[in-house]
Length: 287
Ligand code: C2E
Ligand code: CA
Ligand code: CA
Ligand code: CA
Image (cartoon, rainbow, N blue to C red):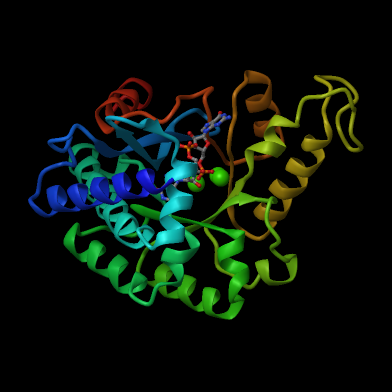
């Protein structure tokens, strides 16, 4: 664990230095590499409308370390702050690059924000500086927050979210349904996107024919009832509802029937390097 933290610190320092020098975060002399991959988010017609930035770290001796592990470690030792700053800048630079290449058909770029990062006093300032540096227009950047973040200090979170939105940044609630958010405060927040956690999507097909489900068509598990309820609630609150972890045609069809606005998952594409993402867009969207 100690080795992981020491090595991750080195990777973050190198990435920040490389970023400051204007290069993309390539490999450091010891062979380590920290980069962002992007997973497409598609609308009901399969058109790519967004890109979720997901961090990838390959260390010469530890190999590829899953983000869940290095993010958790970074939250404990404070490295999440410099790491988060790097990721935000990297994603914003990418959003600008795609806008220059594709015009207003460029995907909005979604960045994960950890609770520790969101609570940091300089966070809003940093977002503002990134917007100015990369001349981001409204809709180009979305921040993904978890329910846990929002519940820690609901009033403060609501204020920060409204500031971010005034700055032209969209806000998403990630992994919705897995945390402890209260429906009582959800309607007070101005949220753009509600991301249905993939556990519900995975539980959609099953033995049970849920109440309210059509009498014919594929059998539906209990995840289908929860998914349907979240979609209908999100949409009635005016939110864009996005289902995560979509892996099968059957799931996609059911989600579209339920009125889900957008989807993301291996069915469309795994997270891929930025260059590969641009190729996907060129193929699918006819840009
Ligand atoms: P997340 O934000 O919920 O990201 C979605 C995760 O689901 C990603 O895992 C993605 O690769 C995976 N996924 C996408 N489609 C499918 C699918 O169809 N089926 C299944 N089973 N999985 C799918 P990944 O990349 O391993 O990231 C894990 C978590 O690490 C993320 O969960 C997020 O919480 C965190 N993370 C990753 N990058 C960052 C980052 O830059 N900053 C912060 N704060 N957290 C990050
Ligand atoms: Ca996410
Ligand atoms: Ca998620
Ligand atoms: Ca997650």
